[in-house]
Image (tube, rainbow, N blue to C red; front, side):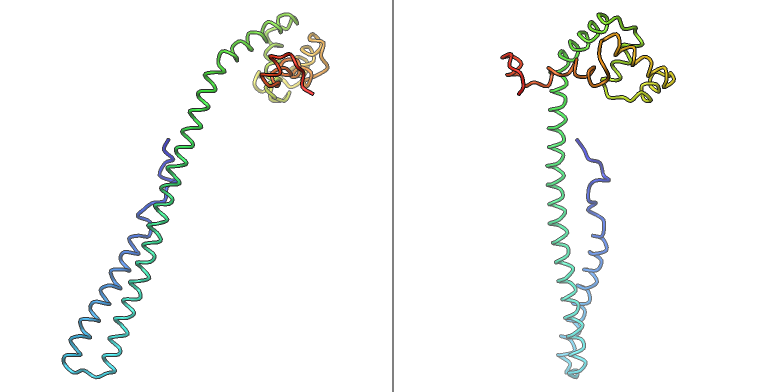
Length: 197
């Protein structure tokens, strides 16, 4: 899974400017050193030699600072590259796990859907009421149910009330508990017939 260019640290950002600065400092250091050596062989005065020596020293110090920055950026880029690779691996593993779970749960979900449809039929729900019941089980509000079904909120409330009345339930919580209560038990308790404490 690729995170895209916007999530990566671009290698070229700032490195061109740093390389140019390094080249300038290196050129200053080399030219000042060559001139210093040349002036020393010609017997130039100490003040001039000191100035050129200081200029060569500034070039060397600047070059050292730039090189240190380049090393730090290189380490950071490598570290970010490793972190990105690790994150990509984790995302890929998570996606694979989610796909595996969906595949394993596919038959169970299909069976649960069919069982819910049978229960809705036993309760005598109309197709519209059955759809409202499913939307309520998904956690949608009456306003959201109305929007999805393209009806008024009052109609959605009336259909929800009809669902509860036909099912002999008092509201959304009992509707959810009717279908989901036993699904939350750990498998070993459900198989053994034990009830949660």
